[in-house]
Image (tube, rainbow over all chains, first blue to last red; front, side, top):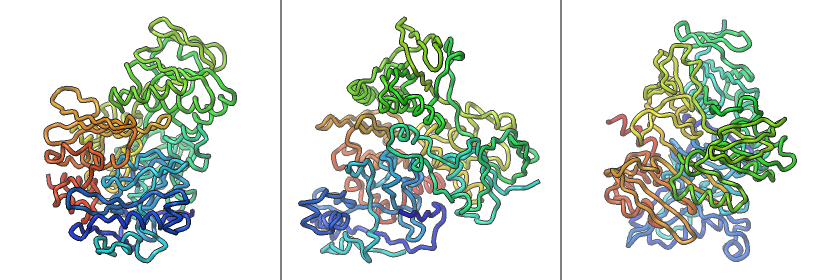
Length: 160
Length: 435
C-alpha cells in the first residue's frame, strides 16, 4: 500500500466526510455493525462473511443503555491522538481525504492507539497478525456502509 | 555560514513530530535535522519486534524513505551536535561545521544509565535502546545462550522477551519487588511475571547484582546481593535511562534532571525549545513537570514544540505516564497514577471472567489513573478522561463496566465529544486556554 502521508498540522485541502450519529432516531438494530462487517469482508457477501470466512472486525459499535442507543465509529479527529502516539507510523492522515487511516502492513500491534483513542474506536483486530482495525470511511463507497444501510437515518454523512 | 530558520538536534519521535508540525504551518522556512545515528528516523520501541522477527528492517522506519526530501528538510545523518551557543544562535557539529539558527529544538533524548556495579566496567554487555543494539543481539544469539537481564523495567522486559524468542535461557534480576514496577500495579506485575515464568523465564525480583566478573567475550558471572551466582553468556543492562542534558547545560539552559521548559516547550533561553525524553515537561496528572521517557509523550511534545516554533502559540496540553505492553499474549495498558501513594485516592477494581483485570484510580471527582489487563478494548476512553481532567463523579460507578462508553456520559458531554468531533487533546487545550 502506497502511503499518501498528510501532515498532522496541515488542515484543509480535503473534504473530510464525517459520520454523525443521531441518537433520537437510533433503535439499536445494529444493522450498521452487520453491514460494516460485510463491507470489510473478503467476499462482501453477507452469508459468506458471517458463515464461511474469517469474520472481520466491526468498525462501528452500537452503545445502548435503556432506551438510548447510538452507533459510534472513529471520529477522524482533527488532532488525532492515535496518529501522534503510533509507534510505527502505521496510523496516519490520508493526504487526499483527510481521513485517519491505518496501514496494517506497518502495524505491529503495540496497542498504543487503543490506549489513547478517546472513543474506543480503534481495537485489536483479532486476526492472526496482531494489528488494530478502525473505521476507514469505506473508501470504495460513495456513502459508508453503516450510513447507507441505516433504516432510520440515525447515521448521517456530513462533508466538510 | 548557513542560517537555518529551524534547527533540530535529534531525529526521533520528538524531532520528527516537530518537523511535521513546522511543515504544516511553514513550507518555506529552512529546516535542518541533525542526527547522531547514521539512519533516518526509526522507531526505537520497535527494536524488540525486530529481534523477534515480527518485523523486518524496512518495518523499523517511522516515515517513508523520501520523507526529508519531500518536506524540504536538510538531513544531517551521523552528525552529532557538539556545541550550542544560545547567545549568538550558533551550533557546531562533530564534523566541525558551524551553522546559525533562528529557532532551535533540543530533542536529545536519553542515554542508558550505567549502575555502579563492581566489575561492570570491565565486562562486555549490551544495552537495548538502539537499532545497533538489536543487531548486536541478533548476531550474538545466532545460537541459544544463557542471558541475564539487569532491570525489569520496560526496556529490560522487552530485551528479555526478545532474548527468549531467540531461544535463550533468560533470567531477569530486578531490585524492586516486582516486574514493571513503574508502569504497572502489583496485580498486573504478577500477571505479567506469571506469564514470563510459564514461558520459562527466570524472574528474580527483590534482588540486585552486586558484582560482575567478566569471563571472556560477553560471558561472565554475576553475584547477587543474596550471594547467589548466575553464569551468563550475555548480559543486558537495563536499569533505567537518564535525559541527555549535557548540550543544554553547556549552553547555559536551565536543567533540573531534564531540560526545563515552559508550557510552550520553550527553554530558559529565547529561541531554544526542548521536547522528548530530555525535557522536563508538564505532567497533567501529577500537576507538575516530569520526565516521561515514552515514545507517545515525546511525539506529542515534539508536535507542540514544532507548532510553537513555527509561530502558532499553543500550550502543550501535558502528558502522563502511558504504557501499552504485551507479554506472551497478555496485553496490559496503563495511564496516569496506577500506584496511588496514599489513601486520598479511591481505587476501583474489577475482575472479569478469563482473568481480565481492570482498575481505576480516582481522586476527588477526577480519574487520575487506569490499568486494564487482558481485555483492552475501549480503554482509551478512560485515558481520555484522565487526559481531559473530566469530572467523573456521575459516571464513576460505570467506569470499569463491560461496555462502558459515551452512553454513560451526560448527553451534553456525549454530544460535545461525538458530534463536534473534537479530540480529547484539543479539548484539554481549550480548557487550559480558558483556565
